[in-house]
Each structure stands twice: as structure tokens, then as C-alpha cells.
Length: 395
Image (tube, rainbow, N blue to C red; front, side, top):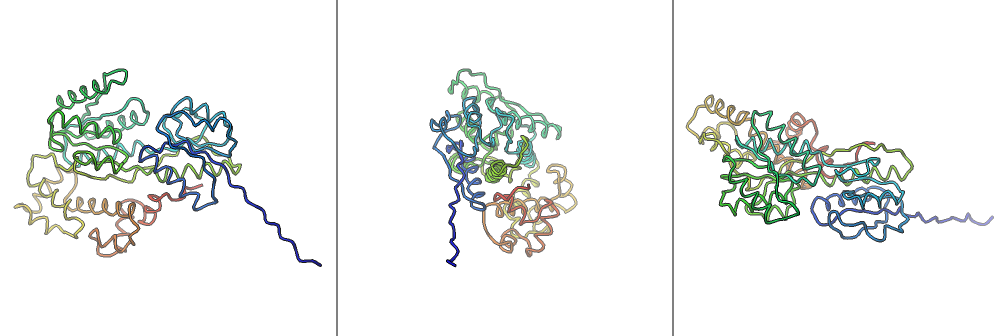
């Protein structure tokens, strides 16, 4: 009997169109998340072209016969093109122009909460929001930011552009007038980093000191944009990588014939990348301000309350009372929060083993860090790192 003939069957890759702009850091993070997913699963053949936000759909999509689409559906033209394709699709835009599709987006309520907490922790009593009325997510971030600030018995001044027809110069002038008229010092939440950069430019033009008069925090942590800003811009870090990974997983399930409900999948942010634009403490108590600055500079060195008390001529009881009144927590709690913030940053941005993360953030050993991290965040360090790197979403 002749030997068994083995058939080699070529596995055809699924054809997936990526209608995602490549012009900003958030969108590129989405694409990286998609790549991460296919590296862990079977490969796809991608169809992608360089484009900007809101551009017309590519001409090749008209006669394209593929298996699935992942898109930022932000214009009626793209919505029509995705519908005409008649293939499984996932939407990565908050515009919700094709509501029958599953939707993956950043959790805007959590983004706004982090921005509010960041400014409140710095002792501000006055707050502002600078949005962009073209985008749903800007509206949602503004509403949630106002809710968070009002819960702290404060109010938010909102910039509402009056310039029509895209008159950039007129809007910049309106922004300057708004900033000059605000009470000072004030903390401003800009709906995304480009808006934050515009606020910084307007402050410089108006002669306002940043962060002395106006502190500014944006969203997206577009590193190049934030570092080129003057001064460098503090920004909330969305988990674009995980959003892209989640979108790829949802599309894969659809292409395999599984039902996926058209519901929102909201991805929480990773934290705040603090830079000079919010490097200030807006309180009148010099001793408390000095302690906060000391803690932020030295928390990762394993400092204790005895080290803090050497900074100011106050008893422990008096310092704790004044600190609690102005900051909302004790110096010891502040030390822990600063350390945990640094831990999250190292887990999200590096591949350092946990023992080195512990060593660099003032914890005695990795086991103790794990216990404290789980107690304070509800996650283990490994689970947090997995999520920050685009961990596989639950089925």
C-alpha cells in the first residue's frame, strides 16, 4: 500500500479593513492594540491607508470584498461605506453613527474623574473646562468633570466658543478673554491634548503664568505634543492599546459566526502623566505646601512620617489636622498614593520585574507591594499590567 498522501491546505487569512487615522497618538495606540491581538491569535491581512481624522473612506473600499472592518466612524460618509460593505464591523468612535454595531471607547466618566481628582489634590478652589463641541466625548467629559467638582462643593467655568465658521484667530482671542476673566489660581481641564496646548498658548499670549495662575491638564498623553508644549502638559492616559485589542477580539468573534451585541465596551484610563503644567499646590498654608512637595519628590525613596516632620516645624498632630483639612487625607496616605501612582506608571510603561518596581517605589519587597496594591486598587500588579498592555478581554 502506498504511503498516505498528506494534503497541505493553505489557510486563507481573513481580510480586515482598518479605517483608523494614523495622525494622532490615540489612534496609533488603537492600531497597536489590534496588532497585539493578532500576534496572540491567527494573523489577518490588513487593508490600511494613511489618513486623518474624519477623512473620506478610501476609494478601494467601494469594491472591496473582505471579512471585517474596524473603524472610527466619525462622519456620515464613513458610516455609509461601512454599512454598504455588509461585513462584520466594530466601531471605535463615540459619534455612534451606526448604533447597530458593537462600540469600544474610552471611559469618559473615569477620565473626567481622574482630571478632577488631580486638580482637587493640588488644592484648587476654582476650576474650568475647555471642550470641543464637535465631539460627543468632549461633552461627556465636561459633564462628568462638572459633576466631580460640584461634589466637592465647587463650580466649573466652561469655555463656550462664540467664533463661527472655523475662525481660528477669533476663537483664540475668545479663549484669551475667557482665561483673563477667570478667578485665579485656577485648574483647567482640557478635553484633549491639542485643546490643552491651545489653552497654554492662550495663557502665554495673555501673560498668565502656568501653573502659577492657570494649571492645565489634557487627555490622551500624546507624548510628543505634551513635551513640546510650554510648559510640558499634564495629561490623563487613556488605554488605547486595550481598546484596540478589545475591538479586534469582538470582530474576531463576529467573523467566526458568533453573535456580538451592539453595546458599549468602555475602557478605563491608566492614570495621569503629571508634568509641569500642573506642578503646583494652590493652598495658602506654606507648611502643607512644603510637605506635599517633599512627598512628591521623595515618596519613592521609602520616606516615613519622621522624615516628613523634619521638613516643617509642626507637631505630627497639627500637621495631620491641617493636611487633612486642605488635601483631604493624611501625609501618610499621601505618601502611599504617590508611591502607587509611580507603581502604576512602571507597570504600564515598562517590563521591569515586580521586585525592581517595588525597589524603585519605596516598598520593602515585592510581596508587600502586591498586598498593598491589591488592597488599594482591587487588582494584583500582574492583572493591572496585563490590562495596561492590552490583556485579553473576557468573552
